[in-house]
Structures are given as C-alpha cells and as structure tokens.
Image (cartoon, rainbow, N blue to C red):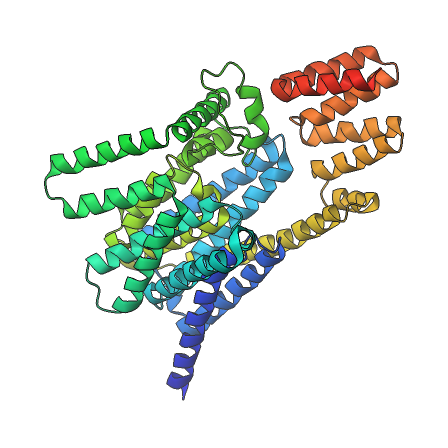
Length: 499
C-alpha cells in the first residue's frame, strides 16, 4: 500500500512540475504579481512533495554542490548590499533582487527534486505544450493575445532556442525514451524560431548544425564566420544599434567599475551616457543587447565575477552534454541579446543549472547534517521573502493602477522608496495648484530616483512660478545633465508655461 501511494505521489509530483514549467512562461508577466504568488505556492507544494518522497535521503550531498550552494548565497548577499547601499533607485533594485531570490529558490527546490528523477520527461512535455499553445494563440488571436502571455518576443526566442537545442541533442544522441514527443517538440521549436525571425537564435541553431554535421574543423568555423557576416549585413541597422548600446553599457561600467549603478538601474542611467557617443542608436531601449555588459554596468565587476563563478563552476564540472550544450547556446545568445534579463528565461536557465549540478563529474557523496539544515533554512527564508515581497509588490501595483491620489499615498506608505508613487502624488498636487506641497513631494521623487528628468522639470517650473529663479535654473541645469536630449524638449514647454 505504501509503495502504491508513493507511485501516486510521484505521478502527482511530475504533474506539478509540468504545470510549474508551463506557468513560469505563460503566467509570470500576464497577471501582475498574483502570478508570482501562484508560482511560489506551487513551488512550495513541489518542495514538500519531494521531501515526502525522499524520507530523509536528502542528507546525501554531492561535494560540488556545496561550492555552488555557498557561491549563490554569497552572490545573493552581494545583491542585497548592492540594492540597499549602492543603488540610488532602490525600488527597481528590490524588484530585480526579488527576481534573483526566486531564481535561487527554484534552483534549490529543483536540486531537491532531482534526488528523485531526471526531469527529462517533464521538460519535454512542458516545452511542447507551451510552444504549441503560444503558436495557436498567435494563429487564432493575433499579436494581442500572444503579447498577453509573453509581452516581449525575446521571451519566446530564448525559450524556443533552449527547447530546440535540448530536443535536437536528445534526438542526435538517440536517447531511447520519448522519441516521438521529442521529435514533435523539435519540429514545433524549429517552426517557431523561423516564424520569430530572431537572428541571434537562428544563427546559433545553424551554427549548432554546422558544428555537429561538418567534420572538417577549418570548414566548420569558416561557414560559421561567413554566416555571422551574412546575418550582420542583412540586419545591419540592428547590429549598429547593438554596438551602440554595448558602448553605452561599457561607458557606465567603466565609470562605476567595481559596484555598478545598482541592479535594475541601467534604464535610468543610460540617457546621461548617450552624450558624445560615437554611435547613436536608432531605437530606444531599457536593455543593453549584451546581458553580461548590462549586468556588469549594474552590479560591477565584483557582482559579475560572483555570478560567472557560479555558472562556470557548474558547467566546468558537468559531464552531461545534453544539458550543458543548451546552456552554452543561451550564454552565447546573450552576448548579442538580453534574454536572460527576462525572468521567464532565467528561471528555466537556473533549472537547467540545477540539473547540471546533479550530473557532475565528481559523484562522491558526504553526509553533512549541518549543511542540510542550513540548506533548509535558506529555502524557507527565501520562500518567506518571495511571498511577502510579491504580496507587497502586488498591492503597490494595484494601488498605482487605481489612479486615485489617496491610493498613491497608500502605495508610498508600503514602500517609501516607490518613487513613481511620489511622482503621481506630486503631479496631482501641481494640477490642483498646490505648488508648495508639490515641491516637497517632488523632492522625495528625486531623492528616490535622482535620474528622473521630468521631476527636475516640474521643480524648475514650480520655482520659476514661485519667484525662485535661482532654484529654477538649478533644477533646469540638473534636468539637462540627467537627460540632455529630452531636456531641450522640456525647455520649449517651460517657455510656454512662463509666458
């Protein structure tokens, strides 16, 4: 009876994992922070179910995991310091810190699950369901329905590339189980990648085929280099934009080399660094089209080194090509794109890393009860932090969307670093003609976000209207320093306001 019950629970666990793998793509950005709560509770159920099936056998740890375990904890601790002591815009940094905490708890939980199963079946089924669902959504509902689930095409591009690499290698290595399902997944991934026209993804796909099937080493790299040049010429404007944004990212990194500007803060700082750039991008963005340059600009060389150590150590000690090559593919893609900056892709990425830890070269196992209790403590602490933060963030978003001044006051009471809430209050006070009160609130805005050019504009207008010309010019000068391009547009508005 006990064995039969365990089999049922094991099947339930597989279903829960498949649902989680599907929901992290389809729900993460579609239903505000409520979806994150659903995912958190689903992850808790997966963790508890795994512990029930393990019945104490989790006391066995792979030695390599101990290094990984402490490396990721040190990285999270650094992100905490970066958020609260380095970042000048802490609210955005808290959001990114929360994302990394969720990636980490997912990594830990799936490491626990992997004591029981390999998860190949669950990955294959989830890849097939998600891609088929999204493709049908586009066919029958158009871009509007597709964007409801995945607001950014880079989400699908990164996800489909990971799916394609995994299914291709699975078929190439002639793994015996689930061949038909894997073949269908491979076909759907191939169709979706062509449909998306993601040049970085398609280039990696073709390069993978060349590396596998061409035998001559010189010919391999010649073909890949030729393909790279061809794609660059066909998509020349996009290449120029990518170079421009990488230059901007590097300028920020060099200026803030050790600690960066604060995680999640690149999008606020880049306008200051577009001035005197030898290349001017044709499109606006909030991302460097190079994940590692953006990460370096936000968390500095110290944070980037800690993150790379965590990833490289896992890959170096892995012997499973079926799992490691898709990770290599995503890493290469992120030298010309930012798909790992998108939570849906990063969660899958961290799950693959947890799979790789279990497939390490060194299989010596040790019993370390103290480490196990620390491991459990970290998982519980991360779960509590994620759930409390998701509830708080969801409350703030709901209050902000109400567009009522009293609700903006409630939102900033939940988090005094919520600069957008302060800004909405200040703008509403300006509209009511309460300039002195508005000035005080705008000072809170620039305190919690010193890069918001529009707030300096409002402060300039308010001071000119109140007769404080010297203060008006001071804030006008600061506005131009923060964002000179948008600043001149506001100067024209200022002239009209003061007539």
